[in-house]
Structures are given as C-alpha cells and as structure tokens.
Length: 191
Image (tube, rainbow, N blue to C red):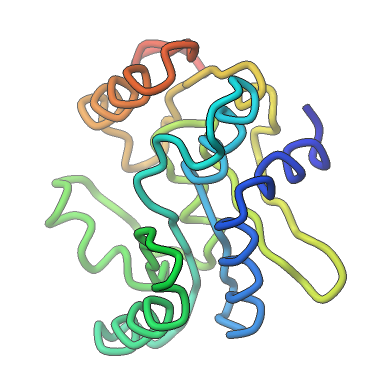
C-alpha cells in the first residue's frame, strides 16, 4: 500500500473527510486527524466491513502555544458544535499541553512536544503513527513507519517514551475482538 492508496481508503469513510474539511476551514494550528479512525477505516475497507465499523472515536491533534484548559475547551466545544450532526465522538487535544496531564493520568513520563507530529510519534502502536490533514490543494499524510503494517493488518509496539505494555496489550486485545484478521505482535517484539 502506498500513500495514495492509504489516503483513498481513509477517505472512503465520509466522517474522516468531513472532519478534515472542517479543520481546514477552522485553520486550527498544526491540526491533523490521527490514529485509529484512519487505520481502522483501512482495515474495514480491506475486510469488506462498513467503513465506520469498530471506530470508537475520531482523534484530532493540533498544536496551540496557549496551553490553558480554557483554550482547549473552546476548541473542543467549537468542533462539537460544528460536527455534532455526525453523531460520532471527536477527541480534540492540544498537543502543546499533553505533558501537563499525561503523567498523572497514565503514570508515565511525557516530555513536552514541539508540534503535533511529535504526539503522533508517541502512539502505542507503529501502525497508528499516522495522520492526515487537508491543505488548499491536497492532503498531507504523516506516516513515519509507512503503510506496510496497516496494509498487512499488523499491530506492532512502538517503544516511545510513554510506552506501556499493559496499555498496548489492552488496546490490541480490543482490536483483535473487532478485527480477528489482525496479527498482534507481543509487547516485547523487536521494532
């Protein structure tokens, strides 16, 4: 699978395209649709399921130097107001402030980030280290590990600074129930 095939598959889920269009209109700084909603759409295309099957939420990352909860809450409420008619859960998070709450919530270190793609780089699985965003004339795709694991339906651990074997195993088990075709590598698998 190449970039264009991946993008075409993800955009078969109209929710991904609608969110990308809205993020473009809002001009949120460094905004991306990320992770599971993209990969799981591709899995659904590959396995002939409904494009939104098993997708629990649609993650949006953006990077705003205003690290206040109030500023992030305004963005969350604005997106809910604009996209509430989609009847999906949209999780918008300002990547500039993740280090403020992540250690307390997950009990793991989380150094400050410099941009949204730094947050993508820290996902638990390598196959979900992916983001898309609309630009005036095309889509940008960020995929530092490429698309082989997505196309091969392989779940592989990502040894980022915040990696948790327990969280990895829980996420992989949930996915395996929904997509029995996936191959889950153990948490201690080599990269």
